[in-house]
Image (cartoon, rainbow, N blue to C red; front, side, top):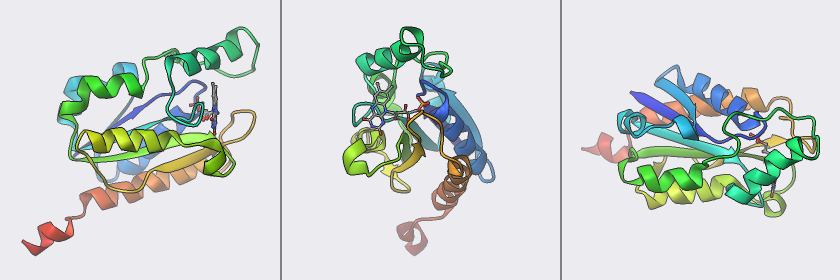
Length: 183
Ligand SMILES: Cc1cc2nc3c(=O)[nH]c(=O)nc-3n(C[C@H](O)[C@H](O)[C@H](O)COP(=O)(O)O)c2cc1C
């Protein structure tokens, strides 16, 4: 079985999480992890499980304007953060309409966000999950957030948790569903 992990990332945190999720999935799936611009229709067609994640921007999924602000924070305002190739986009919001009709039956959503109650920060994974369901996917596990600090660095332990989440997701996706067992 094949899993495809598609992510957006401005400063590398969501990429790092995506790579660890991929490592967790690798015990049971053949896994490819790619940023949105590299996620082709062929890759989607070949996937049995799709895992999508992105950074929380302005309480939800990124938009062109928030990605521009993220780039500007580094380029114009001198924030000491690495800028990912492709940070300017396109993002998942642009990608879903292109591939929506071809998504596999099973999916999962994650995000990165600030370490504060979700009611305050918002969660990109909510919007991602909504898109996945809208295009007919079943969410194998609930959407999950991985946390960064105020300086945009992943909290310690989050990369480890991402790998564990990937392994749990793989186990759930590989297990026969109740209705399949009954038939
Ligand atoms: C323009 C912008 C808006 C943001 N808005 C939010 C927000 O509403 N809630 C939140 O928790 N984090 C917010 N953040 C912090 C991001 O979630 C954080 O930078 C991201 O998780 C880091 O992931 P990345 O390194 O993959 O880009 C924002 C960051 C930027 C650059």
